[in-house]
Image (cartoon, rainbow, N blue to C red):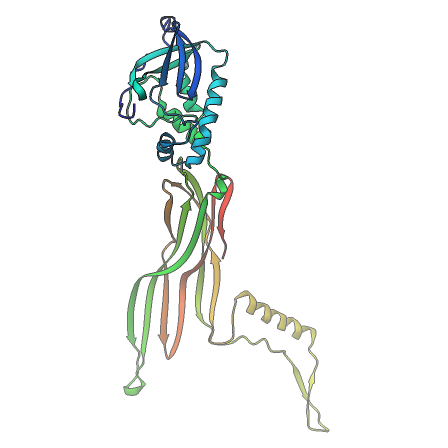
Length: 364
């Protein structure tokens, strides 16, 4: 059956169809997809066409299913006995009919009939096994009334049976991230200032276009039975430079003074309430505008609005680059004094979730 591309399948849901199909009894379940049945007083070996179910005995057959599914072979070996138990439960005390599609030669000259077991309501055992994740359909093309691939896909997404993942979904990802502030372009200009001879000075400017980049690497644990949908929420931290502080706003204590006429010495009066209030305002101003001492840059840090994007992971290794808006930044030298003004990115915040589970976070 491994080379079979088309599986003819009659429509078991057509009116009066079941009356024409012989009723059978299951004599022995060898695998979830392989049986010995009693039909018309004779014992026949039958296989459910178009699917493969794990064997209760480890070996080459289970290794093939392990390779097809990406699941660990030990899990496939356990699924063999579980599939037989499920089949017993599904078929117990149920009226079954067998429709034959063809024959398939097995070992030792034994003839195996390919077909399907049909319940009284028209559904088939093949549909049930695929829905429960007890079997797989490794065939790319076939003709059938029931969409086997869709049944298998639903079992994958709901992680049933063979498709069960060994670890919880929030522990299936290894995530790392890093940041880079990149200069996209530089525009240089020089202006000669007025003056004669040695007194002439150049005023120079460099204008940069800058962009922040967040690099995210996600490694996904095997097996990857279906694409994962992740949500990335990120924000860039931006520094705004306003140039250098040329003149310091003093926060030194304000002190009155008077001269002692007899001794000729200078004595200081204590601060008045008005002086203390003025001092407080100056100190607060320095904090509000993030000003350092004279000659240092005046700047402010801002965090951009958070953005949420959805991505789909289709491979075990995924690399993502998140780009910020482009901003402008200028470095200037004028009259012997250097200063900078404009914006550039210095850090980022990042959260990654799968469903409601937080799987990674970075905060500046």
